[in-house]
Image 1 (tube, protein in one colour):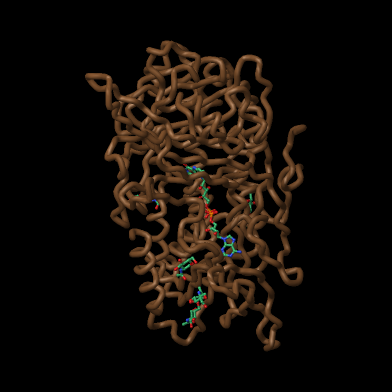
Image 2 (cartoon, rainbow, N blue to C red):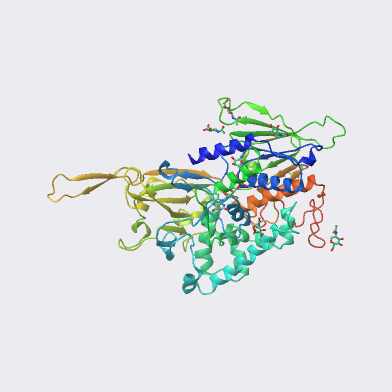
Length: 560
Ligand SMILES: Cc1cc2nc3c(=O)[nH]c(=O)nc-3n(C[C@H](O)[C@H](O)[C@H](O)COP(=O)(O)OP(=O)(O)OC[C@H]3O[C@@H](n4cnc5c(N)ncnc54)[C@H](O)[C@@H]3O)c2cc1C
Ligand SMILES: *[C@@H]1O[C@H](CO)[C@@H](O)[C@H](O)[C@H]1NC(C)=O
Ligand SMILES: *[C@@H]1O[C@H](CO)[C@@H](O)[C@H](O)[C@H]1NC(C)=O
Ligand SMILES: *[C@@H]1O[C@H](CO)[C@@H](O)[C@H](O)[C@H]1NC(C)=O
Ligand SMILES: *[C@@H]1O[C@H](CO)[C@@H](O)[C@H](O)[C@H]1NC(C)=O
Ligand SMILES: *[C@@H]1O[C@H](CO)[C@@H](O)[C@H](O)[C@H]1NC(C)=O
């Protein structure tokens, strides 16, 4: 219902021709295609519309989206199919320093909520043998510094300072003279962030004398739940970002609302169920026309003739590819992409959501039957676990996290249940769920409630799992150390947003890259841009073709 009404609103917006500034009627309308309606594509359209309005440029934006909805990796599913119980299946949290998302929630009157359980409980970090850390948890604010002091001394304080400092440096990318940027590699170098991205989390923490138990227990639990990676296989920046979720928020009803609001506000033509299959450069008909335009072919995802390819009638001045190229299946016709997009190793994550009246079993965690059991569990490596990369990295615990995310009412039994979310490298099995919950799953669990006279026993069946929703994602790249990042400019009028994912992959950073590309396009129309990179720091970043540091694009700098 919620989704349908939103689609209705978007369709209405799409039917309205964009309002053009009156004084530019003589100039031709700039045609811009955005491929993908996730955080990056929605932000591109939103900001380009704003910049164009400010500058009186006539821009006509068309968005192509393969799926039937806006949001991409930001999406909810409804527990028990109840639209009143949406649960984040993809990107679930953002923080105060995520200025684009935070401001958008204000601008669109969206309500920010504290994600997480609606009740007090215990939160723990499990290493496959025992809990290395537990604390009371009232919300998603996993670790309160005060509570960490007694166990880890001043390390939490110092790590927190390092996080604040790194985030502060990163935030310079939002402002002049660092914004906009034609090369992320150049900016990472200018801001000295390559010192953080070029080493592993382990190395970065060690360089700051912070590689003790706090790193192993807490920081690694954070890098595992955020980026399914042990500290030895994630760069320092990814590590710092993992430790930043203090004060985490979600949007009431779903984070995707930020992006549907952005698309609506952009007045773009939104084509859902439309897969872009190829991009080609148009033959220049007019010899005076120096710059050729782009021709896009699409296929209709939902129709019976799904394979039928249609050539879009509009020729585009600019095309923004706002999705990881390697999963887009878009064909490049000719040699249009001057700066080839190198594939990046993406992790594969199983996300399992389910609802159950049961809590986690003390036995599963080697606890006394009467002991309190955490309702949210993050994990780290066991003492004798070898740190491994990617899917092999879960170690003895076998999963990255198992958290209680919501309390719901089962519509059939009217009983109270918990919605759990499990992040694991492999699909969860019924054996695993049976021992985690301490009940036989999936066979129906039968409970006998004895009656006074012992006769006529009242049989009541309780489903151990009443709603089940598994999903598999390529959620983010494996953040191996690196000092170069795919640039946002692929060629004249051709842009790419997903290069930022190897730097940091969050909704905010994708939105930032979308905003950056929007600024570059607007500046290009205004004649502001040149092919030269702005001269931010003396002698550096003068030319975006220049490879600032050694190290080949797409290749990690250490021996992984
Ligand atoms: C399980 C999970 C948990 C996460 N947790 C968080 C979190 O808590 N906080 C956070 O900030 N981030 C989180 N992330 C990361 C975050 O979701 C991503 O970094 C961000 O959403 C990426 O946005 P994007 O627009 O760049 O890409 P996407 O969201 O992937 O959008 C790309 C869009 O392009 C479309 N598309 C692809 N190919 C084509 C084509 N050929 N034609 C037309 N359309 C096409 C796709 O359908 C998609 O809608 C999480 C991700 C996952 C999966
Ligand atoms: C804007 O683009 C759409 C295609 O998405 C096209 O149908 C429409 O005619 C264009 N409008 C203008 C004014 O160029
Ligand atoms: C967010 O809003 C604040 C307050 O209006 C403003 O100062 C800031 O520049 C905005 N940031 C972004 C990224 O929009
Ligand atoms: C997209 O496809 C889905 C599934 O086929 C369908 O339910 C939906 O109505 C379609 N949406 C649009 C806008 O065409
Ligand atoms: C896809 O095809 C169906 C059936 O032919 C049509 O109703 C729908 O409008 C088309 N959608 C798009 C996005 O072209
Ligand atoms: C760039 O910086 C250098 C060193 O400060 C300076 O000599 C040069 O003039 C600058 N170039 C431009 C285009 O501003």
